[in-house]
Structure formats: structure tokens, C-alpha cells
Image (tube, rainbow, N blue to C red; front, top):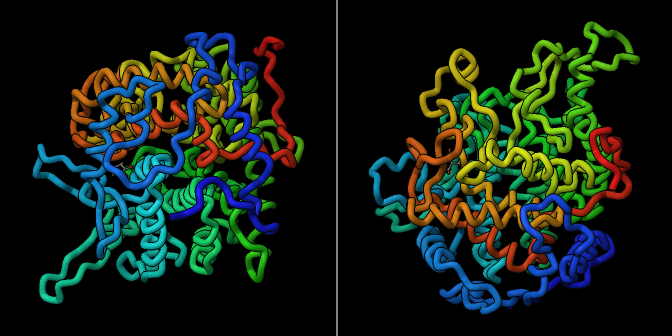
Amino acid sequence: MEPLGLRTVGSHCSLSEMDDLDLNRALDRPRLKIERKRSFDERSMSELSRHDSPRGRSVLDTPLSSARNSFEPHPMMAEAWEALRRSMVFFRGHPVGTLAAVDNTTDEVLNYDQVFVRDFVPSALAFLMNGESDIVKHFLLKTLQLQDSEKRVDRFKLGKGVMPASFKVSHDPIRETDHLVADFGETAIGRVAPVDSGFWWIILLRAYTKSTGDLTLSETPECQKGMKLILSLCLAEGFDTFPTLLCADGCSMIDRRMGVYGYPIEIQALFYMALRCALSMLKPDGDGRECIEKITKRLHALSFHMRNYFWLDYQQLNDIYRYKTEEYSHTAVNKFNVMPDSIPEWVFDFMPLRGGYFVGNVGPAHMDFRWFALGNCVSIMSSLATPDQSMAIMDLLEHRWDELVGEMPLKICYPCLEGHEWRIVTGCDPKNTRWSYHNGGSWPVLLWQLTAACIKTGRPQIARRAVDLIESRLHRDCWPEYYDGKLGRYVGKQARKYQTWSIAGYLVAKMLLEDPSHIGMISLEEDKLMKPVIKRSASWPQL
Ligand code: GLC
């Protein structure tokens, strides 16, 4: 049995950083001070923290959380655990992942019978929170082996560090053996490699290490090499003038053309989080030292860039609205030459006086003002957002609840693209019509990221309200992949049923609320060495 809790960590490894422990300790104590005044209800984090931690479970069929008496377990929990276990994939006797969906209501399987790296993350967190780390360890090791295989699109060889988007177990009936077949984008729609997979892999390796205290996995030469290979793809020098990562459309959760090419917030936030996670696990020996130096420099530049140029609040919007264009030289204020006329009408109404968010994309003469859920939640979890920015993101969410949450948490992005814009930007994609799928659809899986962000900012009551919405429908609708419509009222046009990450996302959210100390697995405290550059905007009242 693996040791529980954190072991004392060697001097090279900062996994036991004071910061993270501080957070865990703080979460074990009442935190009345961090509760915000304008919350939906008056219940505070301290109420949540009084319950014992469910650490130390072994592999039993009944989840420990539902056996606890302090919270009345919702009947959906037991069903969710059963469904999650039904999705487990085994390879040569070991559990190695979960299928994307186990939807028996349709014959159209597509690639939902595979283990997707990004989809497995909430499953992994649910298992870790329930004390079942085996499946996570095997997943991490198997995907690492797959990283080693040769990957090509036609005659072009992909970088060595690329992690698969998904894999499946294939049975050879003649030899009577199983082997794993991976997809690195070479069979995916659009043929795009998943930039997010490698980042999620690193984030999960840290979550595993934090949760189990087992350092032996991340310290193996294989894991150290795997991390360096992933990061060498992103830290290589080239023609870039920005520290952000240049990406093709479709390289992340939004895996179809949606006009997010360039510098999408989802990837930048995951990149930042993966860099910080890697920094806490890399050994400073051999090429490790060089990698650590590169990471440190990049983090510095990346956080400055994101906090300055991606951040939008009322004050910033007003500044952009009044921008001069065609400025040359170092004194330019409008550095990327964004045309004020390109600001969409909706954003003026959408922006509250109090609150803000990281916009979807920033590049030359280009600002995508759309709000994206995943990028903003991960920015909070990773502390890419300063404490003030994190609070502002939550303020905006509360303020724009009807638009961003409506009847089903959570919109993947806001607003949707319609008409001519939809035609041009998506290439007339019939799956991404307005308020559907990636184009403003509502994805229950995002509940876990929302909940993590709520707990990190000390506002669990927001997550509770979202959980209530989920509990009123998700089980009745058979755990759909996504919902459609401006309010998220309709089960998605082509949504799978029994979508695993909808199920696991719910479980993670519930377990985080029951025991907020779990947040340490998937959150990083503010890096004190990186000074916040953004001051609270004028719209904020003094606290
Ligand atoms: C869809 C989603 C993608 C997900 C996959 C499997 O393609 O866009 O993010 O990983 O389904 O669920």
C-alpha cells in the first residue's frame, strides 16, 4: 500500500512547497475572511471544512464519500460511481483509463470508445480522491510508453514529445495478445495534434504525486524524460516574439475549427500550469537544470504577458476603446495594433463594472473577446491569475450567471458565433451551430473546474449552486456530453449519453465540496517571486 499524505520531500523537489502546504492547512481551518460579501448565500467554506478527510480508502465498490454521514449523499453519487467503473479499460490485467463514453443508446461509436487523455483527467482525480491511485499510475505509465512511439501524418514526422489524444486496446485474435493503439492527431478530424494532452499529463503526474505522496513515479528517469520531451516542444527557440504558445485550431478540448488558432487562452493557461507543475517535479541534474532555467524564464515572461495583455475588465475595455492605432516604436500603448472598431458590440453590455476575465486570444491586430470557461478556471487554479484577477473572474461569473451558466453549467464559451461569422469562422460546421457543442454549448464536465476555481477563491457557494442545477437534470438525462441553447436547456443535438467526463466531473465537484483539502492536488499557490503587474481597476470599491 502506498503511503498516505505527503512524504518529506528531498531538497531538490518543491512538491512540499510551503505554499501548497499552507493552502492545505488553511483549507482545514475555517476561512471566514475569504468569504465574499456578495455571494449567493451566507454559508462559508468553514462549514465545508469541518468534515473529515476521506483519505486512505482502498479499492472497494462503494465510494467512501457516499458512506459518510455528515453530508446527506445524493443518490446520483452512487450511480455515478457505478457508471464510472463501467467505463474502466483494462490492459493485460491492469486498469489503464476510462472510455470517453459508454453510450448503449447509439450504434454510432465514432472514437468515443477510446481513452482520451483530457477526458481521463476528471476520472483520475475522482479515483485519486477516493484513494484509488493504481489506475492513474498505470495510465501515466502507458501513455508515457506511447509517447515513445513514432508518429506521422502522411510523410511528416511529429515531434518526439507529442502525447496521444487518445488510445484504445486492440486485441490480436491470432496471437491472443492485446496491444495499445494511439492517435496523435493522425486520424483525428482535422489532423491536429493535441497540444493539451502533454500538459494534462504533467498536471496529472503532479496530482498523483501530491495525492499519494509517492515520489518514486515522478522521479523515475522515464517520467523525468517524458516531462522534458513535452516541454522541449514548447520551450524551443524560434521566430516567436511572444512567450505564449502559437497553436492551430482544434488542438485542445475544442478539437474542431472554432477560430481559436493563434494564442488560445485554454492552451496558455494549461501551459502555465504544466510549467509550474514540472518545475516542482524536475530534478536539477544533467539537462534537468537547463530545463528548469528555461521554465523559470518562460514563466516570468508568460505571466507578465497574460496578466497584462489578455486581461479585460471595465477599465481595460475603456482603454482599448480609446486606443490610437498605427503606433510605432517602444512607446506604443496599443502594442498589437488592435483596432477599436473590432470590439464586438456585445462586450460593452456584457462587461460589469466589477469583474473581469482573460480574453480568448491576443495576437497581431487580433483580440478575441469571447469568454472561455476552461482557460479562466485553469488560470485561477494555477495562479496565473493574480488574487485580484481570480476574484474578478468569479465576480463576473456571478454577475453574468444567466449567460454563462443559465440552466446547465457551464458554457464552454460565450457568446456563440452566428450567421455569416459562423460560416467564415467554423467553415460552416454543422456540429458547431449557434449555442451548440463547442459554439456556446454547455458542458457538464466543466463543473469540476468551476468548483476548483470556487474553492480556490473561497467561494464554494457558487459551485453549490451549479451542482444543484446539475443534480436536477444530469442523471435524468443519462449524463449527456453537452447541452444546447442559450440557457443550456436542451440535451445536445449530437451529444453522447453516459459521457464519462460528465460523470467524473460531477463526482470530483462533489468530493471537492465535501473535502476542500483535495484542492491541493490541482491548484498552485501564487508564486511570490512574480510580482503582480495589474492593479485593481478603478471600478473596484476599496475593501
Ligand atoms: C469531443 C470533444 C473532445 C473530447 C472528445 C471525447 O471530440 O471535443 O474535447 O476529448 O469528444 O470525449
